[in-house]
Amino acid sequence: MKIALTGASGFVGSHLSTALKRQGHQVVALSRFDLNQMVSHLTRQLKGCDAVINLAGEPVSRRWTESYKRAMVSSRVETTRLLVRAMEALEFRPKTFISTSAIGAFDDQGRYDEDDPPNADDFLGRLAKDWEQAAREAESLGIRTLIFRLALVLGPDGGLMKQLLVPFRMGLGGPIGDGMQAFSWVHIDDLVDAYLFALKEPQLSGVFHLSAPKPVTNGIFTRLLGRVLHRPTVFRIPHTMLKLMFGEAAQVMVSGQWVISKRLPDCGFQFRFPELEMALEDLVRRA
Image (cartoon, rainbow, N blue to C red; front, side, top):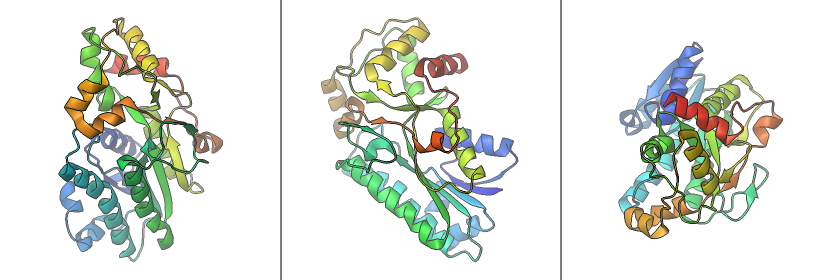
């Protein structure tokens, strides 16, 4: 297949791009330059594509100024709308559109799967709602549309693990706050497998959670990472310190969603890393 991919140079996108090419697919990497042009430019880039995968979005884990919050919205919602408009302009449209969302669509009070309606009403919750609504506009074009809500993605060379491995290896790791907040996660290999699975299964559509079957708490994650690295994890990180460093974004770090994937397993998908300790052992070995 010929597959257009936004966010191809990022942590998740680079892993997915490599896997797609290994399977013989042709990947059209859409850069920020492409996404900042007129619809006609993007339509030319999408010509002949069988599928479009949208991973674009500014990182969440930095201080949120008002201008940066606007950039977060634009890079997700406006980019998704632009892709849909570009696909609409094509004579022969892609058969599949896979867009991204996040488990921040839910609050931190319950346990959720795809049968539960999103209920978060904070900035990230509203962002996820608008992001998903923009992606669903592709359905009216007759394009099979999937939305993947991502949990925290764990990989050996990027994302959260890249930030944590150095301090944890130095024995400076510890839980955030009281460590009781939910920690829903997915191994990067399972995430990539899920995208490949969705491309091969034309009957799949709608919302899917990319989250391992067994979420834990931040405290358990901390203890297991310390165990795998054979290091103590006694340096608790207070909420006040994160608030000083990250402002409003600190709330993301001291809260968490308990979210699992129900629909993927029901459709026959199998997670290679259902248990966190198994995933961490693999990631530490590869890092």
